[in-house]
Length: 416
Image (cartoon, rainbow, N blue to C red):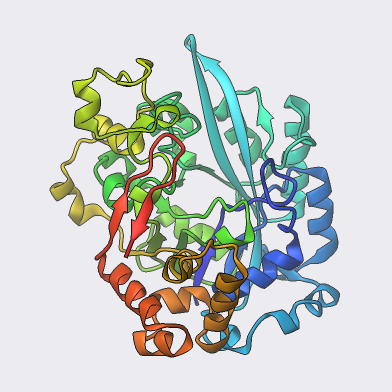
């Protein structure tokens, strides 16, 4: 069965996350977006874990949906068009993210890891062990003072069907290969346990082509996820799969890295990511890798070290040119979130009532957001919105856009 999956999100119990990230809202917006399988996020948090156990029921092995009494509250909020044009029914997969801060060989490392679990029994076993290490109650994404290899051992001891996936691997401070506190290879981080790592998450500031410049990453499934902290950002990156609709079917596809099952990634333009380029946010300084070399990595305004972004870090570790990488890159679709497109066309903030109304009007008349962005005809979109919105989507599909790159925590800006 074909479906779109977003394995990495957060709940209302994570730091700096919307209070509306509850299961009813997530299920509603998952269907409006066209996401077939969505991670629950944050299953290590006791309160969220209790909500998961109370409100979800297993419908396929390892996949869950809202119980009928909760489903009733969202029926009227999901447009018929979003059911008709959806690839599959909406499901949840048990997932969480942990942050590890540790020293190894005299150096401090900070990594984020996604955990996928097949059952609440596995969730309970993982939670029990993590609770011995640190405070899992203060944040949906707990910060733990242990080596990332210890997390791998805990996760696999809970169930052989669990998966651990390094998150946003290029992010400067918390990515496995990041410039500030990362390793120079996946094997350097995990050693002999690398055999149990089957997938990595590329993050918003890199694309498939950039990841294909490292031959070491060929053996891993490269995943796109939203890391959403708000409903609006669900599915800003996602994955297109064709597998059995079950936890085992999905995990098998990831482990085999089978392109007949992992059909494509749906990705941000990496320049829009907030760590794409080098620079110094406090001084408003953006630098290309060449400019960083020219100024010896020092901000020309405040004379402090700049943050080395993803593009530069990929260049540092790459063993292939961009041209060589082309034949190794996975199939991908590039998108800009529909809210951003509507906001630019209407010249309003994406939170304005006018933008919200137009967004929902498009979904109601055309279908879920991914259908609008990837499949719907421009004529159909124009009839439901404006010719300008339809033209913008056509330009995005062809890559005919202009982007001011992001850097040091500042998102890039796109113009259609």
